[in-house]
Amino acid sequence: MKAKQESKVLHMARIHPTAIVEPGAKIGTKVEIGPYSIIGANVEIGEETVIGPHVVIDGWTKIGKRNQIFHGASIGLEPQDMKFKGEETYLFIGDNNIIRENVTIHRGTEEGGGETRIGSNNLIMAYCHIAHDCQLGNHIIMSNATNLAGHVIIEDYAVLAGLTGIHQFVRVGKMAMVGAHSKVVKDVPPYILVDGHPARVNGINVVGLRRNGVSPELRQEIKRAYKFLYRSNLNISQAIEKMDQELETSPEIEHFLRFLRNAQRGICR
Image 1: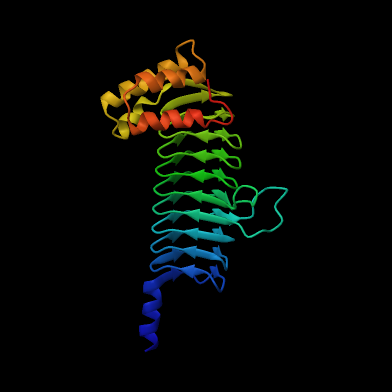
Image 2: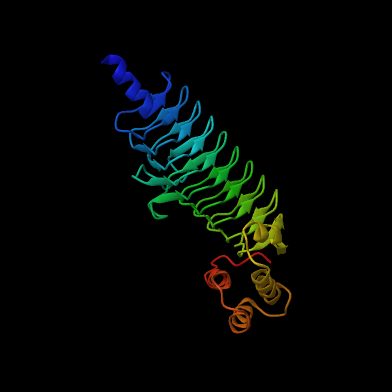
């Protein structure tokens, strides 16, 4: 009977004997937790997630299914915010994410809405930092040592090259790409390529559009939108009006226009 119970436990989760899983933590089936990792009492980990050695996951943190978290990652700890006083705030991580070595991801703050949220199918490479109240979508690539300040929004399929710094409250649009070593202090519109210190617009992210299956016809409309915004003498409001009048309606163009209308920090030029 004892052997039968042990096999059931191994089927449910494989927890290294040196790992610490505090009472109250919810561990899904077929989860693996490596040597010397620490899982806090308010953590929930979805099935088939693999956690490497020396990982710390704490706070009110919920992690979905089939994630891979490599050694040294620090996830769900208190935000680095002087106004934070130990409030109950949250971190939500979706499914099928790869979180590489020594990544740090912090919970939200009350002022920022109380939660940091990361979607699914993202690749977050080694030494990246995601600060409090950030909101990340799906299929994002963050290359090594990229850092997001608080309240940053990264939309689906964006690519952030290595050693990039994103200022607080900046938004990076869908399928945009930020070049390596960039300093981003203004919003990056969807489908755009930016690079530099500070980041400046370098054209359309044509490679990203092709990889994500955007049709040639739609790419042509995005090119026209880009010309209205960056290659004319129009200001942003006039460019939006021109796009609204002359471009073929599509979800992608509507998203582009909505992004520009809602830009709070100005856009990269």
